[in-house]
Image 1 (cartoon, rainbow, N blue to C red):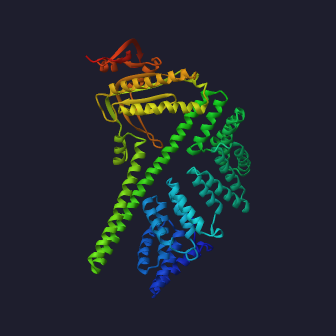
Image 2: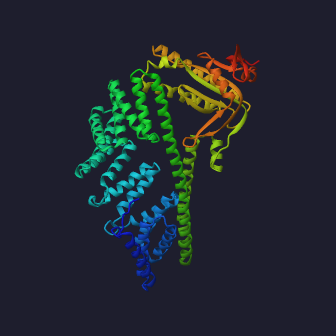
Length: 597
């Protein structure tokens, strides 16, 4: 928040207190209603900027907003609503805050810039609130409204504002417009002799060329960013620039330079304690993984690839949580606005009834249309919020979390767990680049997701080249063993088709081991920063052992699972393996479905 207007800023604290007391005295003594109102407003505005945490300020602002409506002083009402919005925002009461910002915008958007000097700043600030919740399209529209209707000599922090407009375009993948505004921001940085901004903007432009694969254009800008950031100790910007340049060197087949730059970027972030900046870390880890792979160290590359995936997931969860919060707040705002519309409707209806039933009926129709639209918007926002949560958690767990604010772990007597693992993954992957390796894994896991979803099997997680899922939860059932076996057969059929296609093209291929076991588990949510639905118990360990003792192209199951499915599937006995705390466990290969009759 910016102190847009503080006429008493030059006064010391004692003088400011004296001004407050004098304004309060004038307000009490004045017999002129309008003058008294003005003194009260001046005092309250001064109090807000100097004692913003004062718990009485919101109530006083609410009272003044009401009085300004009676006096029809919409200039003061717009200012007061904006200040009240800031109060609520600082207290993280976002729905109430955005409601006030929206009401203020509805007022000051009708004023001329000369009559209402804060108009441009308020519009830009309103856009930044939408940007906070990841709504870049709406944010951009407000930013452009400010830019197109405010004289440049009246825009404060103009470099930052133009850079923000460019960043919105870049996030929306509208690169031509992003470049236009980044170059415009650069012109202002040169004019105002701001070297730090010159470096930041050089890096932003380089990033766009990097995304467009225009590496010859990106390199000198990235190097300039590194030089300026080093000189000005802008460490996050320095690390991001080095990491981006590292990936360009890798693409240009210069693995040693790529490794050096990636390690430099990584050490900057680690040394300065930026490891919880997940947006930065997902890029640093990804490019470091690529650099290790380009230098032939695939084992280390996989470690950083997992780290990049974890950072990316953490960043995505943060964004999802923020988006869920934003959707919730927007739903609440729409509810508030609907209530306001309803009150306006009732007042208008009473007035129109006195003037005639026809006019009243017309108003009823219009207000009904507005109410329906608002209801549809609320429903849509709730649906978006629910979809985001369901992408993280099972439906039943998500519902419990929404109702209680937490989800308890549950015990299940019969769950069938399945593990998959690629045979000789490291050897086969040496023939692929890191990028193509990730592309391959995503191809397989996407296919597995579709197959297990068809049989109501819950995907638990992926760990490197291992895929874990379970049937019989979160809703218990008696068909889980059959469901998982059927899904496993489809997965192996998919892998066999993949093998034949790759052999025909003389390309490397992957083969898969699958292990399955049925037994009791405990399931629930773990984590605070990163939601994760997981399962625990000996059943998980035995299923993992079944996979480890399996053979590529085969489905290896335990004796427990065999006893459940033996009447439906042909199986081949393999012998026993020792298991911790369980003695020896029988193993079987699933050969196929028995013919009926």
